[in-house]
Image (cartoon, rainbow, N blue to C red; front, top):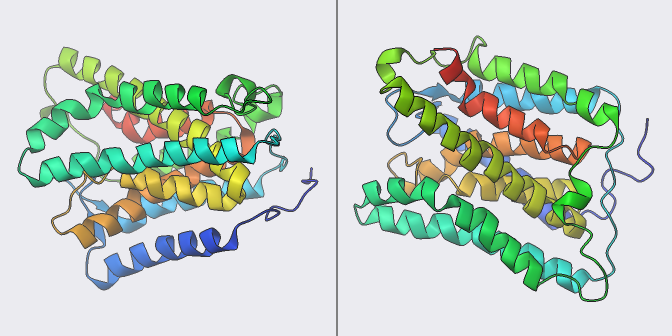
Length: 298
């Protein structure tokens, strides 16, 4: 199956080239400065190699690209480009300002406060506030065609089956592959009941909520404005930026390089999943494999 329009039709080349440059420069600078292994988070005592982070995402992207079918569900058309720009701008500001605010708080030495409000405030910041703003900024002359219920639920069997190889290979490489970090042991985690509650909250506030916001709400509108790959690149960079307050590596340049090379490349994979198949379950499953599967394999 082939796309009726070119993959780069309507592409904003400035964003495309700038985004690609960021994703090339980040890992190159990490290697050049001897940081080919990075702690997954600021409070982690284990490291993940750069190759171990990049390989699963790149392998998943190649599988998405190489395996049929190749026809993504097209985005709906909207004549109200002004409303679309307003919605995309509002969502992008949320994605940029919230991590920046938490980073500035953590810079004052109140890291514990950041950890306390990180997950608790997520539903308000990444679901309630966006839905309110999207309602206010909705197109006036037509129904909003980018409401999630209009585009996210797959209607064809191939949209469920086609993402499976990429998600499975990504999860295996990231968790069990030859470059994967050692699996956690029971000594690494607290009481099992506490762990189960925490893992459940993480599933909803990270695996589900982050994919709904960054892929379903934000990337969809960025794709409609700037083209598929500029939309994927922008949303992936903002997804990487989300981890600025919690994934510090010491210096700010090192932190920025690390979150682009690690979380950013996962964003590329998850964003391509969403763009190809318009099935939010696929990136949620990949996010769950990365965050939650190691706990289940303890």
